[in-house]
Structure formats: structure tokens, C-alpha cells
Length: 335
Image (cartoon, rainbow, N blue to C red):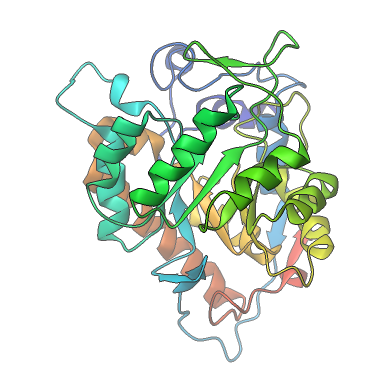
């Protein structure tokens, strides 16, 4: 699996390999995006290997140009691709006149996509969403529960489409609750999740589900959606999100919950595989990260447009006419 190591560690685009000397610094200051070992404990390596092992059969007779429009959380968007819940990117570039988080928001707005925003202060979040377009706000599991509730209310006032919490950001590397930017994080019980979901009229999302067990608890707590994810490989030896996606989808049958997926989906072909296996939409983070940090808004738009083209290409090859018509039986796992 060594051929996958660079993509797993750096998250480089397929069209732009990052030289080995740059990997240690990718994509910004130390700690901006955790860089795991590239060895057996690195969930990103296993994820890349799993994605590449899924092969596609052709079903081209009667195939037509596909319609990519997608309904996400009750609203219509141009594509099932969603710029992921990145955080802190306004702090990483030497050129402080640039604001990558705002650039990403504008790119999503220009393409009629749903944008996600990760850990930002209320003030910074407000500045980002002022660029326009629909957003989902994802909040860290702060030990101070009132801070979570305050950020939920702030998202409501700033017209978020939905709000959610990183349930997978509880553990730190020392086996204690994690600390991010000096802010202590804490546990997330099912009672906590229920309280947060009931505190808002917005759809509430549990991000970081990697088991049927957590999917069922999110359902019981009142979440309207989940993100199947290992959060760029936070969990050592974590299983690939797509490997558990069908079991999770089956467990949520009849719930009305939407299922989103992330996990270093670097191309429209990767996105297709997630959608074929049951995702309602996918989050694209590392797949646009190098473009965003290097060249900004227009580069992100170009990358996402290319990914849409790749997605449409595979949909045409497999007879999928729209985003409600995916069929998992088209995929075959290479031994």
C-alpha cells in the first residue's frame, strides 16, 4: 500500500503530487491538519486503499446525461458535493490579506453548493457567512456545554441551514479529553446530543459516525443527519467510512435521516463510490485544500467543477440518470 502514502498523509489532489519534502509541512503550520504516520495505524492509508479497490461495471445502454441537482436537508443544490467543514485556514497563510475561509464560502455560493464551516469563533463565523450562500456550522464538543448552546444560537441567528457537532473529536492523543486552541473538549453522551438537538429548530447533525451503534444513538437522540467519517484519520486503525456505509444506511431505514460521507474523497470518481454505496451527499475537504490555499476561490471552483464532471462521467457509464438513482450493485471490490 505504499503507493497510497502521499495521498493519505498530504491529501494532495490527484493532479498535483506533493513532494516528500513538503509532506511534513502540509498544509500549513504544525497541527493545522493532523498528519498521521502513514503506517498501519494510519486510517487514511486504509481508506485510500479501500477507495481504490472499488471497481465499476458499465451499464451504458439507455444511459443519458445525468442531473446532478440534489436535495440536502430540504433545500436544492446544484450537486451532491459539499465543501467540507474546514477550520482556521485564515490563520495559515503568510499573506494575511487573504481569507481562505471566505474564499471557500464564495466558491460554494457561486456553484450553488452547500458550504460547511468548522471550528471558528462566533465573530469569525459571522464574517465568513456574510459572503453569502447556505452553510452548515459544525461545533466542537466543548467541555463547557453552554459554549455549544451559544454557538448553536449564533448559527440560528445567522441563517445556517443546519448545525451539528464533531462527536469524534473527544479523545486526545494522550488518552484524555482533547484540547483545541487551548479550549478543553469533553464527552458527548446521548443525553447531551439529545439536549443539543432539542435546543434548536435547525436540523442537527452528528459528525464523525463510524459504526451502526453511533448511528442508532444519533437517531434516538433526534439528529436529522449524520456524517460517516473518521475525521481525516483521527482514530488509529480506523475503518474506511465507505466500508461501513451500507450497514449504517440499513440501520437507519425509515428514519428519514440523511447520510453524508467524507474521508479524503479526492475526485468525482471517489464521490461516485460514496454515493453509490448510499450517501445522500459528500463532503470534500482535502480534495480542494491545496487549490484553496494555493490559488483561492477560482481554483476551488475549477476543482469542484472538474469533480462534478468526473461524477457525471461515471454516472453516464453506469446508467445513473440522477442523484436518486444510484445502485450499489455496480461496484465490485477488487481482491
